[in-house]
Amino acid sequence: MWRRVAILFLFTGAVASAVIIDRIAIVIGTSIIKDSDIERDVRATELLNNQPLDLSLAKRKESANRLIDQVFIRREIEMGDYPVATEEEADSELNKLIRQRFKTEAAYDAACRRYGLPPIEMRTQFQWQLTVLRFIDQRFKPGVLVTDDEIEKYYHEHAAELRREYPGQSLDDLRDKIRDILTAQGVDKQFFAWLDYQRKNNKIEYLEASLQ
Image (tube, rainbow, N blue to C red; front, side, top):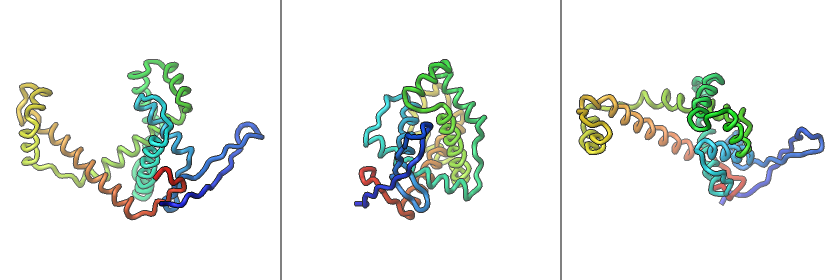
C-alpha cells in the first residue's frame, strides 16, 4: 500500500481573501498529478462522452489512470519533438462536435456550465487529444506491417459481418479497408505495450492511496 501524504498548494483566487487548496495526488518522477487535474479530466470526459457528471471515486480512479498515461505520452512528445496540434485545429474539431451534438453555441456553453468547465478548457482538451492521436500514429504506425495473408484471414473470419456491412463487395474490394482495420489494431497493440512498459519502468507514487 502506497503511503498517503497530504501535500498542499495554496493559490489566491480572484477575491483576495479566497484560498483554493489543491493537493498533489500522484507523483511520477518529476511530474505530478493534482486533485484539480483529476476533477477537470473527469468533467471533460463526461461532457465529451455525453454522460451524466459523476465525480465518484471510481471515476476519479479511471481519470488518474488516464492522466498517468498522459504523463508518459507528454514526455515522449517533448523528447521526440513530435508536432503539437494548433489552437485553430482544435477549434475546427470542437466546432464539429458543437454542430453535431449541441447544434448551437448557446447549447454548448450551457453544457459547459453544467459540467463546470470553461469553454477554453475544452479547446485545450481537444488540442491535446489531436496531439496525442498524431503522436500515436507517427510513433507506432511505421512499425506495423500487414501481410496479404493476414488480410485474407481477417476476411474469411469476418465474412458474415463484412457481407452485412458491405453487401456485394469482394475480398479485393475490401482489401484496403481491412488493411486499415488491421493496421489500427497493430498500432493499438504497440501503443498499449509501450504504456505497460512505461508503467513497469517508472516509479508511480500515489499520495492519495484511494486512487491506486
